[in-house]
Image 1 (cartoon, rainbow, N blue to C red):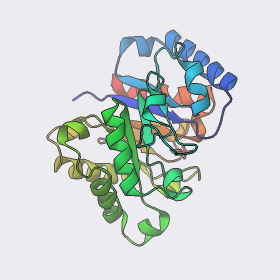
Image 2: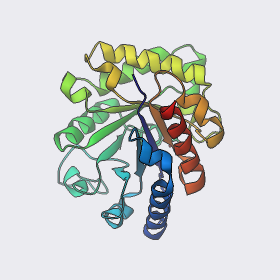
Image 3: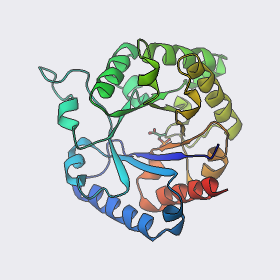
Image 4: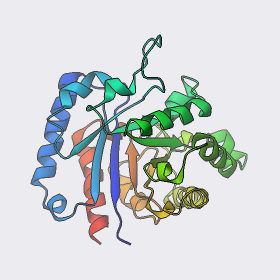
Length: 258
Ligand code: PEP
């Protein structure tokens, strides 16, 4: 089976509206000039800007898909500072759910992550679910137990048709923003395990894109993306400037062309 990739940038709490517009315009020019992109349609490029930039990117996003960094599970009400699926309609196609910063800094629990996935799907957004173990859990030999618990709780009650519409990112918490990347073998091992867990939930488990995230940079992207069960990357730091982000995209062009 030929590989297909999703290369996604999570900008977190970075970039003003003007900076977001500049980035997307420059990125789109680079994509347009690149013969590898024109030749294959197997790399999807996606960014998660802050909410304040979403409207400004409407109409100029070109080949770049736009996602929201969060979504609330209710449509409206007394939920100060939350963002409703109705407000994101026509501004985003993807939504990031359960990012480790949401889980660890803001105390987001699996039960709410599960509700957010259901709401996102109801409103036709593609949920990009993030899961991953902490350093403590890895060192205690509990990586697989943690991954299984997150998959089971976050996907609770979802039909196989619903699961088939999702993307999952494995992001070991100890590798996010730390400069420590999982080795390609460590990443592949967990991705293969996630694939196995998904096999119990849907016949289309091979088609669910599994992204790796955690200090992906131009220097390590190729080795990571070449792994069998890795279908792309979720990138924080290296997605804030066009050059490194595009260098990672270019690595994926080369791998899909092999
Ligand atoms: C992330 O925010 O999802 C992430 C993987 O960040 P970084 O690439 O900076 O580790």
